Amino acid sequence: MTQLALSQLKLAHFRSHKSALLDVDARPVALFGPNGAGKTNILEAVSLISPGRGLRNAAASDMAKRPEDLGWKISSVLTSLGQTHEVETTSQANAARTVRIDSKPASQIMLGRIARVLWLVPSMDRLWIEGADGRRRFMDRMTLSFEPRHAEVALTYEKAMRQRNRLLKDGITDASWYRALEDQMATAGAAITANRNMALDHLVDAQKDVQTEFPNADLALISANDHDSDQADDLAQALRDGRDADMRAGRTLTGPHRTDLDAVYRAKDVPAKLCSTGEQKALLISLILANARALKATLGMPPILLLDEVAAHLDANRRAALYDEISALGAQAWMTGTETHLFDSLGDRALYFEVTEADGTSMVTPHT
Image 1 (cartoon, rainbow, N blue to C red):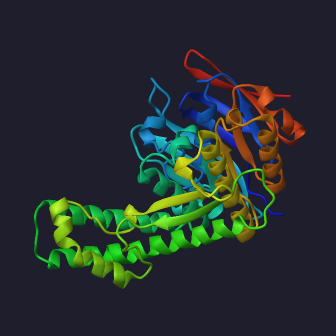
Image 2: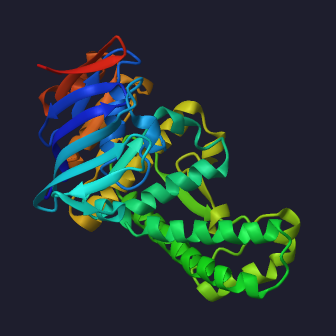
Image 3: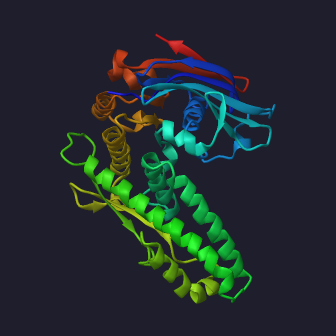
């Protein structure tokens, strides 16, 4: 099996880490230490070898170590699809981040072609009971793992929609001002919907006939206005028909930016939003694992997994089952926990690093 894995991660002035070097292999990586020591910051650094703003959805300027605020740099060695790449992403002080792959300037879209990274962090625990925005981001992150160009069409759609919303707020009624923007939104919006449907199909397939300790979910994309379509002409017409209502609202009410992700705990036939806290967490883990299985089936390799404090919310049996599934996938999973005993059932299947902090600076030490 082809693996996707880091063999080296180097941080400079990133978050709480003035300097850190982790030499690893393709096994899972367990990071342990007290709260606030800088464990999640390492996971965030790994998340930035993929497109986007990382697992905290933070601006580049917020990632620099304080109080120096000198900018930051993440260097890594990545094996992907049988090739080894040197990947570097940096941000000078108060500047947007840049990417270099094998010493050459690269776009974040290029990152998405060589690195697929999935994550689960504590802030996602309320995914099923809070607003649809978080669920859309969750769905789009999974979609991006299958189709790296999804980010590009989403940006095109958002840019055109912002311009259209400005016209609506300014009370512009001349249809000629809207047509080109609505055509851009329709083309990009249809691609967004098609990409999401494709990803959903992969997730459904990945839950079939699988032996897992985590609950399967029935998933559906729910349109807020019955106008989500993978046909550009349909969406363009819906945008034109909705101009009057949109002008009264001062914003665009039609399109994939209003889609929601619905999930039902299959074995109990209970909507995710009505499940217990533990069941909601188990559903999230199940979807991350299904996403990983689907990527392994379609790409021939599992993604890198980032699991922040996930073990603390599972009993010993569920922890062992999670580690067994990760190992069976052959995935390099970066996991955090406050105590080493949380990773006991991993044994020598993982590498271990202790993360400590003193005077606002984190330190990372290999642990045997």
